[in-house]
Image (cartoon, rainbow, N blue to C red; front, top):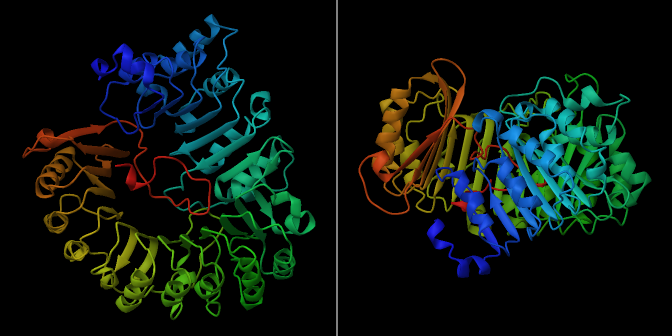
Length: 560
């Protein structure tokens, strides 16, 4: 790689992208960037790049770097490197990153990052306009507290825009972070409460410190609160009371035309047992709201639950013709002819995500617990009339059958904690995948998945056309079992480019393991065809949904 960057070539390079180069020597990334004097954009996500090396690039006197996208891992991934960052900055107390305008920083495990490392770097970025911090593998409340302290700092206040996002927790949160923060007098409370809603917030620092997470009464009182945002989180507090009238009032306002991405969440009352349910009195106001938001392309309703008498999909389809991405709770789509109505009204739909929210704010919905029955004929209509390519089902307690997926035109399919048929068996899933020749990415998560089960290996081996396979299991497995799984699947699936696995070690703890195919060169063993990498925080997963929200980078299968 170093030989490619001759002085003549290096002069011409403006942008370098090293995303997902997890087997590359991280030192080479920084070295190549240093060789390019006119470099304006560097992206190195999922690379264990030395943070001190990144800082040295930023504060170099002749640096022209304007955009930086990178990952910061815990100290055990690169011992003593955080100390090197502090020492480097102490040696150059006056140095500044004078060209940098945009930074996206993905932080793996916020609790393992020394408190002063991120601030020390940001303090030197005096020209920074836009900052996006994304937390991976972080506990919701703790992450809000850690990053919430940054909001009041001068180097954040100078920004034009600050974005915070968080991966969805992997297990149900028993307590809503909002309930722990609401009503408490604390520093940066506005940001923390906004971030507590869905773990996703955008702050326009200049001018006015406006946040894109707003409560319904605030919109009615001050419509200007949402001006300037194309992506919005709208919170309905305790819908069992008077929010329907407020929603009707909000729908009459002329402040919605700029919206393109919308997430609506219901904030529960003090007792999580009193589940917020939107009943028939919300139907007309919701229709009117969507009617004035007809330009929306992404809608997230996963934290919004409807009574069985309200056809959510019919309301969406009748008013949002531009919709391309939709995320809903099972109760929103488990209505007669729901899928057909989506097909008729949302012909541009590309992604559908059906999941039970794990945010701890939505309680347990009785309608979501009912069997989710989607007919094959309904799915056929949806695929015939729309552009559907990506489909996800997460935490669905019961699906009578997956036959509706047969002969689909899907490119990506995700099944997380989904029970179908007589039990949670995966028998028949291989044949089902084979019936969809366009499918290139399949994600399957099952807490009871036995990675050494011969039947499971046979089923997966049938899907020879897959390029990306991601598996999750909470069953403890010996490393020899995992190696055998990698050997058999990489041999049986000749087109496989990525095999990503989460499993529980016999000694305890969840471990991510990734196999990446070589770009060229045939072989019969995993080592001959590709490289296996483990013992590092996982930034390859895409189990969350960011439909309607500020989205992190590097979370689409298209990156491969």
